[in-house]
Image (cartoon, rainbow, N blue to C red; front, side, top):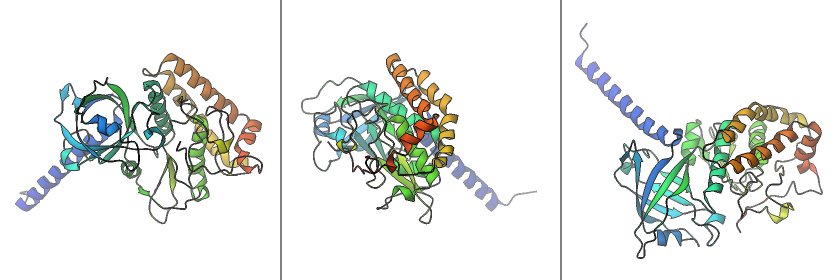
Length: 356
């Protein structure tokens, strides 16, 4: 049977479209699905960029290239600015966190295809703490797909400042864009204000809140959207909280990290459950079962790491032991997780954020 020419052309066009779409998708997936350290080089005026630590951050013109399969890519023009609050402050970090702003038309057929704005976490007080925070993201990836993916990079500097500095290459990591993370989960990101913790479905909230307890992080709040992004399926559905920014977590133990004074804690390594009051302990059963089911994978994430030093692995395993010992002891679990119910405690204190 002879196929009409119009149908043939339609089939060819469809195949071309699907092929192009597939190629673009594979480029997109390669950025955050690969475990390989991406070698990148950034060229621009780093002196002006790194000194931009006060007030509204300013974008600066840069270019970026990377090495893929031993071949260097062409330069990709982009704009870069500093970002964040605490780690952007002068004299706190060796390097401030950065935001990479790509023009989509310049990234076609590159590993950054379809990317728009990407956060780049720079080493603050050395690569040791950067790697610890990187692994916290990987830990939450084990718990849920509704989490930010990350990719390690080795960054080389090409300083075009008037008095260029000879920077040594450093490890850093990219964080998946908020909208892309939401899209990957069949959702969209939302900026709705006045969201209370109780507005989030209990299983989703507890999954996130217990994770924050596991890593010893108190630097978050739903109300002030502190280190929390919200996503949902549509306007009629309830939001889901996705955490990020874990440098103040006890499991990272950054030298500058301190708990908020309002919490009356001695150290960030001290765990404090920051959920809201739930007197019926049965509501935690499903969440504790989830974390128990992921226990082996979580321990293996650290034990099998080729990037973390031996001392960090041992101390992290010990910190994880403390969590699992507690959540599997009903009496201790009740004491810890009903802390927000105590009138004399600090469980109901809402922290706007650690700015200083």
